[in-house]
Image (cartoon, rainbow, N blue to C red; front, side, top):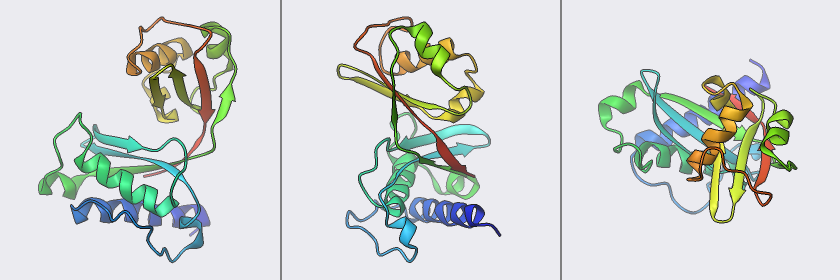
Length: 182
């Protein structure tokens, strides 16, 4: 088994354990056996039931150990994503889990929507949009349902509760990539 596969299995196991525990994870950092789990990391945990989204919570910027971030985000996706009721036992058993480990964000300078759309790499870039108090992100996986950059940006603005075709010079974009494990 290669190193990436081994890491993916471990991260998915951590996520599943946090979901099955049913209780909020402890705030203190855990003593992870693998040193790379102690490094600061940002993750998203996406849950699906029969292919349908059932929860997705994450962290864009690292602020805790990678293992702790997966634990926290898995539990939050299962029990605190306000779009869905908390998971029940039957759903927990059949749940599909995806863990995305985010790279560091890189600013994406764009004076216009057209310039931003032209700079994006569909299928590769996750994007964080910030404008005043508005903030939203899409993981690279969202390109599967929104393959056109203009549409991707429009829906990202809508997620940030901005008009879909709104653009202002004060909009800040940054991009990141992910290592995805299912």
